[in-house]
Length: 238
Image 1: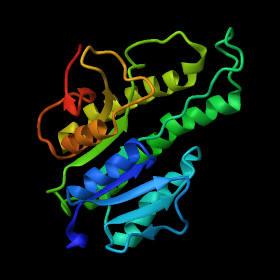
Image 2 (image 1 turned 90 degrees about the vertical axis):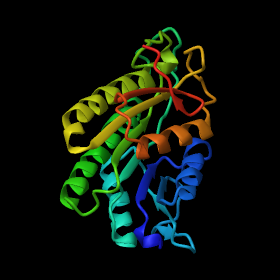
Image 3 (image 1 turned 180 degrees about the vertical axis):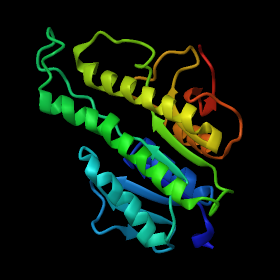
Image 4 (image 1 turned 45 degrees about the vertical axis):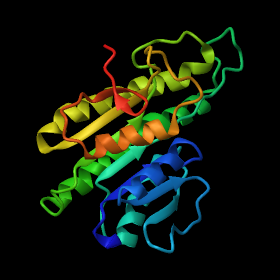
């Protein structure tokens, strides 16, 4: 029955990776709550009750809790898997000045990629802790779509805000994983690379992300918090 299926909450259910995540997890017998700026409001479940579209502007961290509330109100459940698939690149107005990004844009990008996912992870702590032994069978996972910038500094003005944000997020994700791993909760920062170890650029593999994220959600292998993967499979480069 749909009510017995685990729940995955996908923040950033866009047309590429987000859509692939919804398909992949739905096919793996999850109930999927998909959060985007363009969803209907109030939240609308699918006719079969297996998916839920939730609207939120994730540049405002206070709206994160709305998605968790929608899941609880619709399904009477909490998400065992939370995926943060939200990013933004703010181009620098002056290509000769790395500090030319307007501060409101800088703040917005950090909200999208550091503050709001931090708020979502905080909600994970809240609902997973409150659940206690309610659902020990479903692994508890927080997964963030990453990129190579926590490992490689790119000296280009246009990549400043996303680089600062991804590096900052990778830190607290890794810290949370070390802190809560003993409770069976895992926090992953996952970045896709080519077979040669180079970044994927502006064309990340949607199905590759979906395969890797489902594996992280269900697998018991003792993988590191910082995940690098190729074609949907874990691959260590460092």
